[in-house]
Amino acid sequence: MKVKVVIDIEKEEEITIQCRQVTPDLKKLIEFLENKNQKLEAVSNQNQKVYVHPMDVLYIESVDGITYIYTTDNVFKLKMTLQELEDTYQGTDYFRGAKNLIINIQHVESLKSQLNGRIIVTMDNEELLVVSRHYARLLKEKLKGEK
Amino acid sequence: MKKFRDIFLWSMNMKLYMGIYFSAVIFLAGFMYFVQGVYEMTFLTIFTGIMASMIVALLQVTMLDARCDYSKGIFFSKSLVWLFICTIIFSATAIAFEWFKGLPNINYWIFTITMLIGLIMMLWGEKLEQEANTDKLNESLRSYKKNNS
Image (cartoon, rainbow over all chains, first blue to last red; front, side):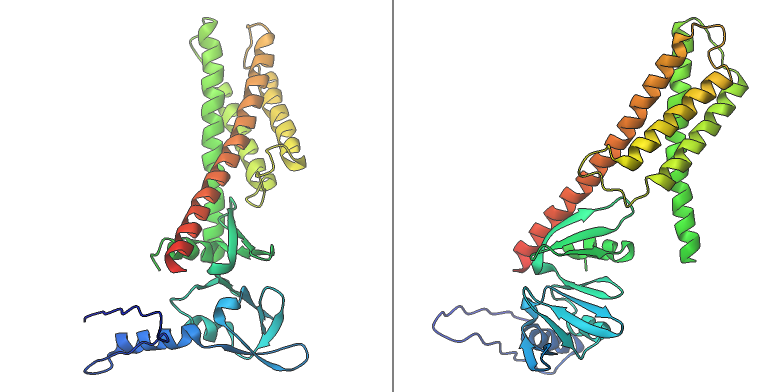
């Protein structure tokens, strides 16, 4: 398959895929491209519908069965479950850090290793999150580009 | 299965520490014997040495568990208590089982102080390991962000 990138600052960004048929790999790629920029439909504290760009999300947490997304200065409720989010944003900067937590790696300020294998994550807004031992191994693999 | 794995890992960690302390005890006592012209060590000294090392290692994995944060230094309330108790254990074992019988009493002081330094070095080692892992992680994070931004 030939990959051609044309850089033209005058034109709007557009991706065209020309193929004989949509193979499973191609389908995954299309889903990835679509999801990467698809805004998340969330609900604000005032019960207003808001759309949040996936890249603006710092982390997503599930508390008592409710999914919350945290941006730099807001918290919104989300209708999707963590599992659905994980499946949708597979291969992106989203990383499952614990059973109830998804972290956006692009908003991680620093990481701190603990002797029990857990990792303390400092987010851009100085919030601290804990990546459990099981997921810490996966995080290391993801950072190295193995996952 | 998960519980079994956790217990297994915990005990492996404990045995690793125990091995390090036992080697240190035998090497130090043996070296002190050697320089004073004693070329044998009793079974009781070896046995009580391994028992003391086991208790010290058990206390380490229990008191100074992996949640301890060494980034601000190795001396904090828990580590100071652990250092105090472990120094007493090694010292008391040596005195109670007469490890340096027939040798000047200063041997007990030298042994106790050297073991205390060894224990402090162990904490220092933990701090270095934690820092090295953190540096490695942050390096990977920077590289990931650079490649995926």
